[in-house]
Amino acid sequence: MADVLSTKQRRRCMSRIRGTDTGPELLLRKAIWIKGYRYRVKSTLPGKPDMCFIGQRLAIFVDGCFWHKCPKHFVTPKTRTEFWVDKINKNCERDKRVTKELQESGWQVLRIWEHEIKEDLPACVNRVEALLNQ
Image (tube, rainbow, N blue to C red; front, side):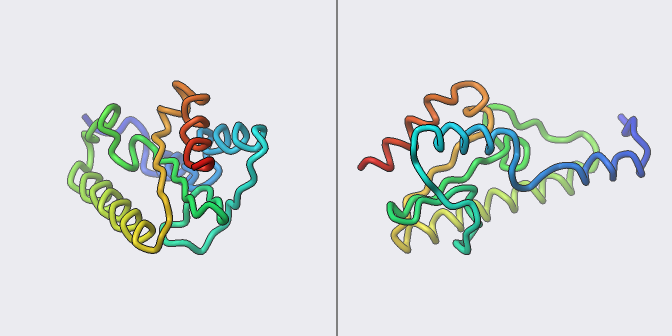
């Protein structure tokens, strides 16, 4: 099926997709802040984690279901399939490489799917707390 939007409209829609400060990311950050934990958002660590707790050496990534190929929600796009599959597979490969690199340098890495935050925010906060209180 052809795209229902013109090229100009599609370009505008795609340009509005945020790479940082996404809704799920902000929800998690706010919930953790309310619990009294302080974190850094800007980081020079590999992969640029969405949040890091420097003292505890914990890096947290909030992965979008589409962009990081969530096993529960990912659906292969019907248009430009080869382009999207290649792009998303590269994202997944980079995620694995970054996770390994951080772990090898002594960091704990927590990856949380955006749907987990939307479905059960308290459980996500508990996962973060458990790692912080080890």
